[in-house]
Length: 239
Image 1 (tube, rainbow, N blue to C red):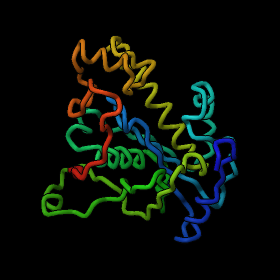
Image 2: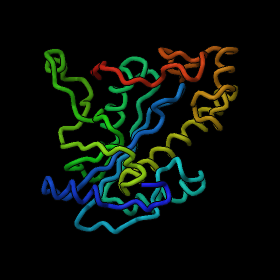
Image 3: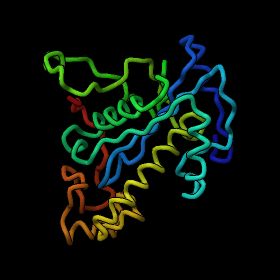
Image 4: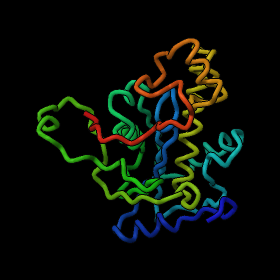
């Protein structure tokens, strides 16, 4: 599907039929490859029995900022439930990208007024399903529960084909962008109001000159060539 084609509810309806369920969660992330700020995950929960088509929804990266902002409330009104969750830069450093994504996704689902019974996840890799528990997990009752125990299906380029995932991507990007604008007021030298924490040349140069701040992912290579390996999924488990 090209970016000019409308999104549909085809994948959402198929997953609901496969598992004989009503409420389908659609999930997308933003900030995975950034040098600073959180990893953020958006969730839209779709009521298959009541949802109306919303073909205007697109991958948030294809929309101008004003268009994304204008769609936030319509997406919230359209969905049966929605949420955005974050994992901080410190949590990304401590856990690794995969576990941080899982943590942010779990937090996003916890915000939803309706729990999803099955989930569509943008991409080719399922980072949202709860990992198998080990002995330390079983003994540590005070740890934040991480990961879902519902069926998860990945959809490559789901934000360009699935209305639910496109809606989730809009919610996540608008909220994370606003967070980065607010953090830019605290640390104006890094240009986060423009680059949103990503690896622009100006951002890397500012880190090289000033050093990283508390919102940078200090376990990453922050100042080298932008083509260096960043955002690689890890097997570190969220505890």
